Length: 257
View (cartoon, rainbow, N blue to C red):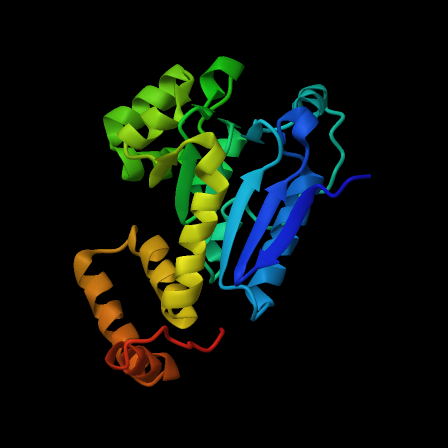
């Protein structure tokens, strides 16, 4: 059996590749379990500073595998679900970057957007698909999409279930960058490598927690927490190294998490 998720590490950047290309990397419990296991390992691995997630072949992730959906419909589904939620990547302390190379639909769209940053191929096909399958907005997309692209645009892609390209996803503010398909993975990895070289792992971990958590708090509460976090950062070796590397005009040598 081939590996469901491929893993490779290069200069601080771990690349995870969904590896069911014959099914456009459709999501199964086994694939999800392996993906989350690798994310957990990445968080503990001091050699990993940033993670890039992509898909093998022509798809990023085409959504839940239809065999799973059929089993759910007929009542024959008997697998024990992973206790980790689909939002699990948001809890990993290291930055996770999606490189959406192709079909990104339904649950696949969820897994792209719970990454911290999203790069997409201009030609990639995106769709929520839910209303066209008699389903509803899954796993927090009704919360995430309005915050990324505004309520009206979120309503459009959720209610219509229409297909749109990576280029349109960028125009609507859904993704960070759009690149030609042949440049996508290298572009995402180059960005991740910039983080690995120039950004403090401790700082990125705190910032990631701040951004994901602060969506549900007031400005006053966010500012209060930020003061506490800033005071804590003054005592870390990362602060001393960040200042020294700036004054000495060299790349920083930040300690791992």
